[in-house]
Length: 288
Length: 254
Ligand SMILES: Nc1ncnc2c1ncn2[C@@H]1O[C@H](COP(=O)(O)OP(=O)(O)O)[C@@H](O)[C@H]1O
Ligand SMILES: [Mg+2]
Image (cartoon, rainbow over all chains, first blue to last red):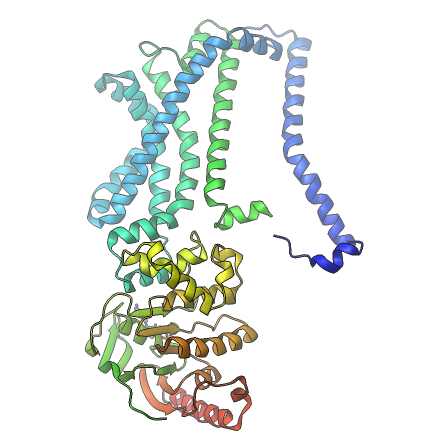
């Protein structure tokens, strides 16, 4: 919303104070730099990488030139996208389970203090124990590879959703809570109309962290579980390429994993922005 | 002027003691009649908010009784807090609709009431706005619309205008009296402003702290509607002086 007086000021030449002009200019520069600088850094790094390999004549089985990695990517695009789809599917399913499990537990804990007191410590234990250490055991007891991988990814990803949603459910404005009590709202009404909307920004914050963590969980699970059975994911591809000293292949798969992580983060950020833009302060700032 | 109105609520001998032996209220007696405008005036910590919470049923007295005359159910009390206390995720009309929603009425069945309430506070054009798009005074108007949309028997207001600038506050004081005349409700209004209490109310209950108690009750026998010019009248100054003295005495007693 602009609050410039329309009638008079529109006909006159706009007065721009020198300080305001400077500020506008630096805002503009920052807006462009936000995208150009990272891209520039990447281009420079790749160029430097290429030069270093060429000048020192580093053999490709130690460090391949970026061109080789690119060539590998193009050549094996079909295989790599299959692998990416597999890893991506596990990641998304894990994220889904983490969201349902994390938010569900948060609501359950919030509704019953006794349940919370009983189980919260175990949620923490599950969170602080490194998943790499739990994963081999999981694959002993769980028959299905997919289920095992999901379980690993869930263990890593559910906690941020649980803890941030719990925080959100408890961060209801005290006066609003009183207002609901005065109108004799039921527990259920309070949950639906007051606590869940209050918790939404917190939940979305947890979700963004969980997105990255489910990818980590999926990759770790794949590395621990080995590559047989369900086909090869990106992590399996890295491992396999490693056995063959195909370093270019390792870099290619790695870059796809990184791209996937960035994509998940960006998608979840966008989701969060779309859900909150109408009312939440965090979205207000972005709109300027 | 002093025609007897029906009794709405009777508070007798109410004490409230919080953990740690904090005597928030001692021996509160208060008779509220229909269409009363009662101000609770006192320094902070004298138990004004505690008294409102007890009347609202949000907490129970340690001893003493709060008795309602006649049926008393959900929607019979409206509340306005010091902050507007709106749901930021809901539009203005959804916020005002809340009391109905909580008793299970559909929006369509009460749309007229919601719009009427918004019209009364002069915000019908903003029904689809979100709270963050409104100024402090406008948010408070939404809060008032929400409190009266169910046409409650009693509206409790806890320092509703304390955070607003004086110009907005005067305007809202005038509008509040007008509103009250239109819907004929009963108001208990907490304030620590002598002028506000004199301008608005027909009874001022002066309170002192530690323990929270009533020290004096003043009447402001001035007819409603009270025009803006009442603020500068000799009668106003006279009432304000009496209320200030009573407040002074209450603070010394503490
Ligand atoms: N929930 C509570 N627990 C303990 N003490 C409280 C509680 N609520 C209020 N008090 C105490 O009771 C006294 C009166 O508080 P309050 O009614 O909020 O005063 P006022 O609204 O007049 O400023 C204060 O000393 C306050 O600290
Ligand atoms: Mg108070």
